[in-house]
Length: 174
Image (cartoon, rainbow, N blue to C red; front, side):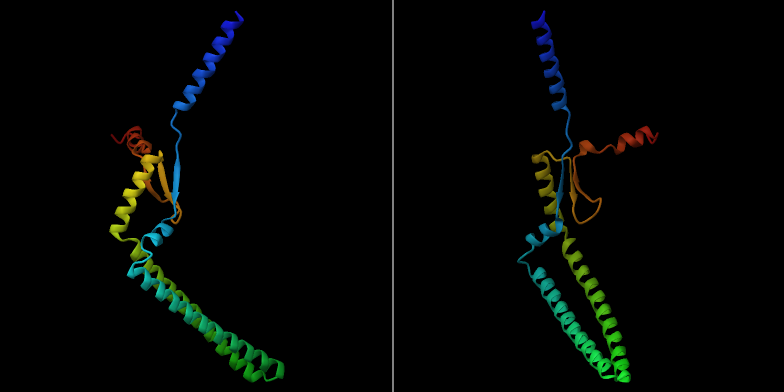
C-alpha cells in the first residue's frame, strides 16, 4: 500500500511538472536600435558627415562658453574694483551671450536630431533590421522585441501573442 501511495505521488509530481513545462513562457527581448544603427552605418559617409557637424557645433559651443567665462571674470574684476557701471555693461553682455549660446545649442540640437532621424528612418536599414529581428526572435523563442529608445515601441512580435481579433470579436465587432 505504501508503495502504491509513493507511486501515485511520483506520478502526480511528474504530471504537474509536465503541465508546468508545457505552458508557453513569454520571452521578451530589447534592442538598443541607436547602437545597432551606429554599428551598421559606422563607416558610411552620411554618419561621418553627421559626426563632423556634431563636432563643429560642439567646438562652437566650447568657444562661446570660453568667451562667456572671460566675460564673467571681467565682470568680477569690475565688481571687485568698485566699477559698478562697467560691471553692469559686462553683465548685459553676459546675458546676451548666455541667450545666444542657449539658442545656438537648441537650434543645432534640432538640426542634429533631424539629421539623425533622417538617417535612422532609412527604409533599407529598417527592412534589414526587421528581417534580422524576426530571424533572431523566431530562432531564440522570443514573443516580443522592444526598443530601448522608444517607450512602448514594439519592433517585432509573434503573431501568437496578438489577441486583437479575439478582443474585437468579444466586443461584438464581428
